[in-house]
Image (cartoon, rainbow, N blue to C red; front, side):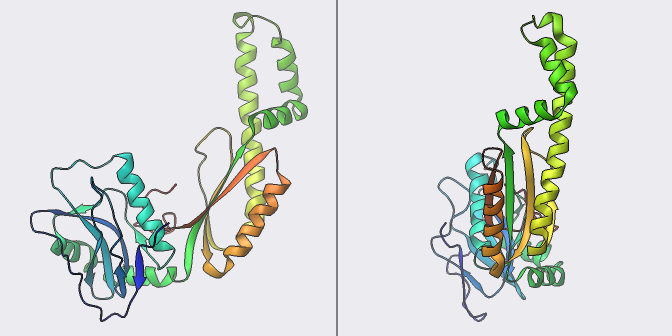
Length: 270
């Protein structure tokens, strides 16, 4: 992923290409003022708009121009928003704003966002210094988890035998009940497996958030705020559980990401 910002002395000159009058300011997130957006950084729009920094005090807002009458919300816009913030988080602390944050102009970025919340944002950025978000997500193998349930749950096994080889209409109630039993069993497994991963990863993290399942076969879905120098330990721990659960749960580790789950102004994360 391409870098979005580079650290520079706080005395760096203002960007050469300010927002043009008559265009709105799309705001991605808040960073320390001593950064400079790279010339290659691009945001939302067709074609993707260059990203600039609006500074005030100790803060900078990552912004790009957007036409007032341009509708937002395309998949490409959402991807651009998240990619810019995640790339930024890999380099410097960032407070991500929710997707679609638009202010009338760069003056409004200062007057309505940076100035009123200056001290609060500075404190939050200080808390995030040297840290980034990582997401651990695991999904059950459908066949493996069903076999577990049928082998462990007497009622589920009995219901399976009851409906086997019989017309669907004649076994409707039994099929409904079997679905309920399986869902309840998977929920219990999800709780136990999530707790096992939490016990292993919580000592490595500053904060941990248990995310709601996004799919019926989700086994684990955690967001963790990690010190940058502990990323290797996190990767080793996730790999440890990947080996332990091979063929049962497929684990995925994403990050570093913008800290969507750990700041009030955070956007939706993936």
